[in-house]
Image (cartoon, rainbow, N blue to C red; front, side, top):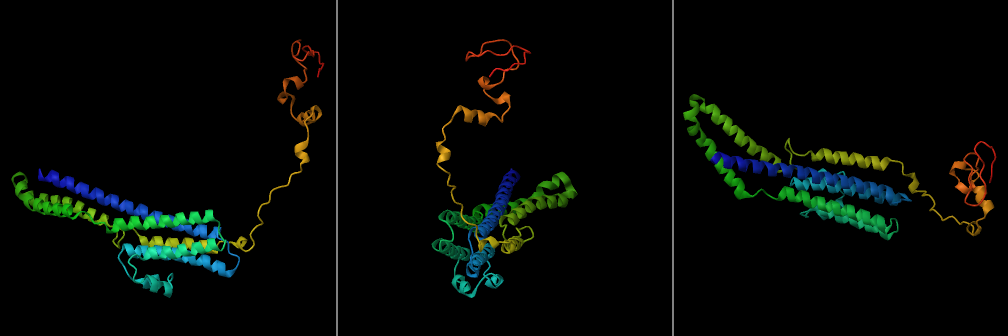
Length: 309
């Protein structure tokens, strides 16, 4: 009976840990996707007519990379800002050093730069709304990954399961001995391996953001994101300096709308179509039985070769 209870608790524990692992993968993947979309929108939707404006765009891309690097450090409970040297400035280092949630501080800096683009009329309000939505997605990604990392598994459940596992595995040999005799050590070993193995798997999957071999490789994600932004920087954006002229409405002449329809104009317009596509009253009657058309005109008889219009 105790084995059934422990088995149920182990399966429940492993299922929760497995769900946390893939939920963490889904949320960190959503953060990477939003960073790429945000960088693309900034690079191609924000015009840059001089080196200073181009530099401001590159600063936004740098801050996006810094956000992801700081998010990784936050999930791993690391405080080493020296690892952010390629992306962080001294001023930013002083601002976020004592901040408990450093990635959110970077989001505030990005938002400030986007508002500057709007006030300088470099982007439309609609484009600003898209960028604002991306910042909201980054904030939601931070909240989701933070909840997965710092929400512990219920301690009473974990403690009860551990106690039951120890008691069961140490008392199981006394139950197995009457049935398997000298093979009791082997049976007890396999039993303990199965139960404690599943328990350790659940512990391994519970936190997917660490440095263990089975954790998510966040460092490779940061490297891939940096390479993607390098591609954005070096793609030809020469149109930014000389943007195309805006489209102008075509001024149609009023005479084109004042032409009155007439039979001559109609016949001239339909003369290029096959006779099979014309209305019946306008077709040439070269075949058919003798009959009286609705308008009183006489059709040609079959094979006569005559045409009546």
